[in-house]
Length: 311
Image 1 (cartoon, rainbow, N blue to C red):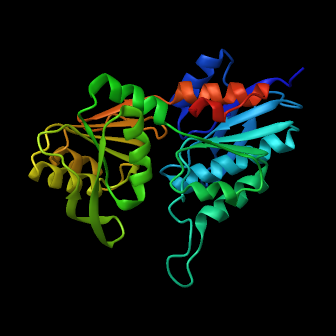
Image 2 (image 1 turned 120 degrees about the horizontal axis):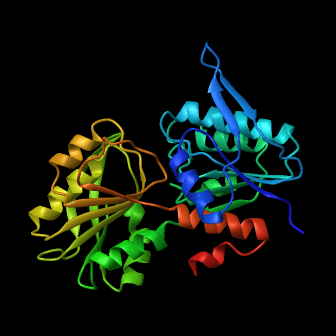
């Protein structure tokens, strides 16, 4: 008989965690995650977790350092409370873009974060659409990599047909665009761009025929939205019809919302791996990955295959 399933959450995305537990028909674990007067994180697990199969849901999104520290302290508390298995469910994995040395004397922060998570007590990690797939190898514990593709594809099929064009915003995303295009049975294109400095993108030209066609830009995350806005402008110049963008992680930092409002984009569809308030643009629609996470948790708990979710 398997151990008792328990699900806890930090403060980064309580709404998503509540949707997950509703789908699994289990209560959300009791935990007090607060602050001392000097700002230090104070955690108390409010129920017995001894010999339990525990899943801790916490995105390491902005404020990234606060949320990462919450995750680490909660993992340590659960480990010291004698949980049998502790799976860190990290819908959005922060520091993922620092996955290699891009200049002398720079850190590989994605690896450092992975080491901290395992050392704190995680015996397994689950995340969605990692910015770089090789980050899975940074962990010395089992890693389950989920893809938001089924959720995004379902939405695309409700709004587009085979005449649409899937466009990658850069060369690195072509494989992702090809995977979506294959399932939608449509053509693909690519934006050729140059990035003069971090968080700035300048579009050079569009590869592929987008004239008088609906265009779907697909990416793993939207940060400052500079790339998207520039891509949409280039596509509009080439007489694309509807221009939609789909992405898993809505980072939306800096002036992202204003750029989206001012852009040629008709709509942006993102998931709820990162929680946002009511400040989102009217062009932005969020769809939930709670069913995906809930099913993955169920399968891990019962020892079933997770990879078969994406066959």
